[in-house]
Amino acid sequence: MKALITGITGQDGSYLADLLLAKGYQVCGMVRRSSTETFERIGHIRDRLQLVQADLLDPTSLVQALREVRPAEIYNLAAQSFVPTSWSQPVLTGEFTGLGVVRMLEAVREVCPEARFYQASSSEMFGKVREVPQNELTAFHPRSPYAVAKTFGHYITVNYRESYGLFAVSGILFNHESPRRGREFVTRKISDGVARIKLGLARELRLGTLDAQRDWGYAGDYVRAMWSMLQQATPEDFVIATGQTHSVRQFLEIAFDHVQLHWQDYVVQDPRFLRPAEVDQLVGDATKAREKLGWKPTVPFEELVRMMVDADLELLGG
Ligand code: NDP
Ligand code: GDR
Image (cartoon, rainbow, N blue to C red; front, side, top):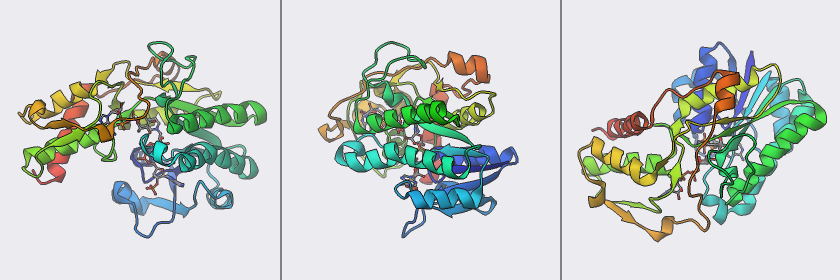
């Protein structure tokens, strides 16, 4: 089996590549041209991967990448994925995160319509939530240019399945974290900040709202769900979540407790990190995934927080 992963240099791409290699797949990653390589997360498997250069902005490059690889499965994980950047670069976010999906789907239609296609959709599409918890039937109310772009990506995937009979599925994944999470996301910002403060490398940690609540899971568990969705007899969309929600404040408490410090002594609330529109609380209902995919999360919240703090302590030499 041959799989193509767009966004292989990101958090999820690297875990998915680990999983597919362990299953015996030939794994190919799509990477964009850069003056410096961004292969930090795939360094440990670099020699087992085929890499092709292409960019979501360039349709010809996508067609060429698919012609070169001829994948049986395509995981479209590439996106501008940081919500605050989507307000400062809304057009680019729309291009990457929204239109990038239809460019991929058009390339699939042209080159390998028999391939199975996974789209990385997001709980951010629920935004200002209509019901609690959120499932596959919950209406969307996106609250950022990122979420609006993801909503387009979601519906265009559904539409190409319904219009052209593609095996195209959309995974509506709630937040998932790991030691490979980008440092600007709040969980990694906290675990990195805690490690720096503990080791005497920093004195404070500046954050936005502490009240926001998220359904946080472990990325390693979530990539298993992506793979399972493409192994089903019929293409369907699934919500993937733990079903539990915690505030940024609770994340802080556990992270600082783990190194025997009090978060109140170090955390400074900084209006620069507030968003023009906030998503206050997300919590997912993954009953369908449990019943049809046999999927369930394996890493509880407290363990995830401690895993991330320990990894950052080790990385910084503590
Ligand atoms: P990351 O931000 O860690 O990775 C994004 C990837 O997309 C990187 O490999 C990046 O490449 C690539 N990329 C960005 N723009 C382009 C482009 N124009 N052409 C080609 N590649 C590009 O994201 P995650 O791994 O956390 O998330 C994976 C996907 O899942 C994203 O689509 C995200 O929006 C979505 N998602 C994530 C969730 C989460 O909690 N992590 C939850 C729900 C959805 P480079 O290294 O060159 O920058
Ligand atoms: P999110 O993740 O926006 O949910 O999107 P992020 O970790 O950026 O924010 C989570 C919550 O924490 C609050 N917050 C802060 N966030 C950041 N980044 N920095 C801060 O200093 C800070 N202080 C408080 C935020 O306001 C927010 O409420 C992630 C991304 O991975 C998306 O790509 C993905 O689709 C969704 O998760 C599901």
